[in-house]
Length: 352
Image (cartoon, rainbow, N blue to C red):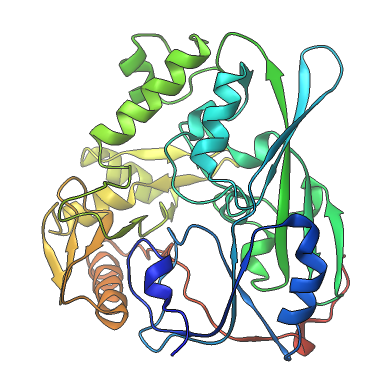
């Protein structure tokens, strides 16, 4: 039997992979990529496994776990620096490093599980910051072209929780991430009301960097946004749905009912997926399926317990999507990624 994916995902679900490779040495990537591309299917690349729902039957191909570590700092002009992290560096550790070094730009991304290399895929964001805000360059391996090269932000197709890496799954593997950060004692302007309240400042204020970063970690723990180390909610993948797009009429109706509507950076309106779930009757602690429950703190996080399977978790997601669509005429888009085999030969397209 191959390596169980359940041992490498935070949901602790998933059967064996046909072949499981761990990438720890950046210099060894060419050899590993050559070994992984020996078949006509792209490998599935796994980071921290915090956003992965692997099938009970496992993965019929090669899985590469990115476990490279390391952070390098290069001075630029004035107070600007470029910081490069290896793809396997935990995002939370990367954020903590930048705060300790007095570098502002990603301080509001602390406490988010997963690796730094996975952050651009989802265009990870929180509290008004997203990884694309400070990104300068990615080093990627292009499986369709069989070579390593750099991608600039404009080539990554970033949007709300999306990117080229998400819309072209399997095409690229991110090897390292470079950001332009600012050496300063204060944090970026506070854009999130709940964080402003926690810091007792107004929106737009720039509190001390370390204080702002700690407030984020405290708020995430308080609201059940951090991965717990024990208890009934320990097996989870965080938020299971994106906040859905709504038109103005829907936004007006939601606000009239006391629900939150967020203004996205791209100017679109998005409803709170968690609020929609609770309005549909799925409160924290509700059982949704066999071994699958809403977490004790929030409906938007589904947790797996002893008798859960990947199949029952998938069914629970479908139940929630159907319930919200039926009640609110709004379709939720799921977040956890499910590994699928993808042919390399079908994806030989140009970088443009």
